[in-house]
Image (tube, rainbow, N blue to C red; front, side, top):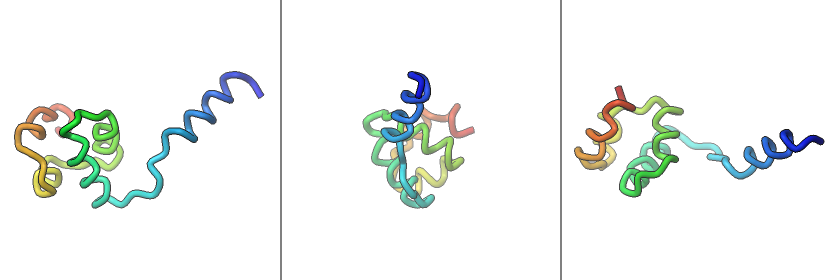
Amino acid sequence: MGKSKKRIINKGKNQQFGNLTREEAVKTVVGNLKSDSKEAYSLITLFGLTAEEILEAGASYEAVKGMENLLG
């Protein structure tokens, strides 16, 4: 097995979300917005979350407004 394939396989093993529901994803995003995590941005784009969903889950208006370009 080549070096590139080994890196791809290891990256896949280490970066797994598991089985997430949309509700769990929203909760995770709200929790990670405070720490400005890349995981939050990944989940927003993966699930196509809207600003309204994130605000209803308890995120602050300022955090959501700061991601306005990502949320559309």
